Image 1 (tube, rainbow, N blue to C red):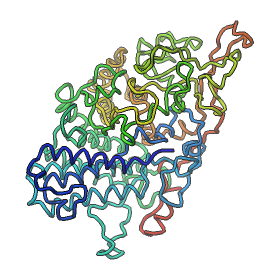
Image 2: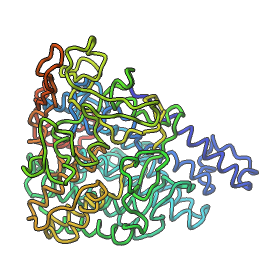
Image 3: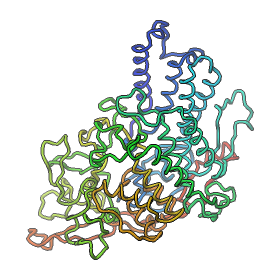
Image 4: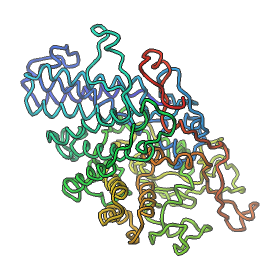
Length: 605
């Protein structure tokens, strides 16, 4: 089960920060204040003391490496036969929980991505307290520090809101710390705001941060405040929020289910929202991209290495420290081939579906269903695009990460001659062992330097990168005006870095839409993006309401493997897929509604 890292992380950050203050600020050090036990008066007496409180707000950022149940489990990119909450959700089982929870074991509440309704408001309260206190004690702080830290705290609050907004829709907008000892019940009980009002709050906060210009555009490796909020992060998040809200599920004027309170859709369509999203992402590209501050990192296979943190593509990330209990990443323990060099190494959780694998192009840049592409379904892994080999472990794949003493060959075929098939990577259609269920394992995002062990990896978790801005722009611009030259330019930069030719010219808007969606699915796979794409494009009825597929490889003479290996795409067998419209949004816990009758439930629950 997932360890509770919050207290450990806070203590580690607090200790490191106190040490840095002692080393760098002799005047504060000579005051001999015990900064591990600050009072309210001393907490807000200086820049350094107040920073300790803000560091605690930063510590609430989810370490998504260590979330047991990745958001990708709720998508058609993964085959899943585990006992997680996603297994129920993928069968159409999603119910309002009795209380606030992030339970991943057999739960029925749907995806939370480690945000419970309860802990979200703890995070907001911390940010609001910091904002209020530095305003009240403004005279104690330097002007530069005050301006910068105020916008950092507002960014963190907007980020927390954006994460919950994508799962729940309209939220109570709380910008002050609530006090049950001084406030009436009426003052304490906030209603949910509409989808539109919540969107406007998030985007308005981010726009103000960008316009203020108090934050740096980007941090680089080795800089003291790397990991803090930036203008780049604020602008990227604003552009993403605009694209998210512009999409069909929310901005069609017709809700997916009756929504009289307008909490999961705009009350009426907002004209020009795609154009707004395009303008925001274009501002990022024109003012900060193309090498000014950000550009595509030239080696996507090595993007996820600790040595490459804060590279040219990273917009915002969460800092991770290897080999420190509770502060490192455990991602490599959960994914990758189960058996490596004959030894049990991982839980084999991350199993790409055949649907995702089929999105990878051929080396000539053509789709595999193009009759001129050269694709052979009985030789499906030859002449595929470079990202396929960088991101996917397939049957017969050479597998060598830097912690391994030698290269292994990973086989996922059904080999009836092997004496103990349960101790190999042989496909496990029934889901009874940790061997993969789809015929594939994930390679992308595994840190090549980190063996599969608790806290062994120190690579930061990247929330946003420049490739996503390019994809966001291309989609928004195509929807707003069609496939102009700038759309081609954005997509072709991604394809060029991926090692495939440019798109063919002359695509229609619909053809470009499909090309962008395909490119997005490949480039951003396993980065917790597909779930929200399925949602906002309103395609989950198709992608999650039908069975996904595995690659099953059998020998034509199974008794001694003297025949040929036959590749067969077959439906996953353990679960029956189902998707109900209510699943587009996550249900609110019942005890929240019981305690605050102003909170209305999401449609369908």
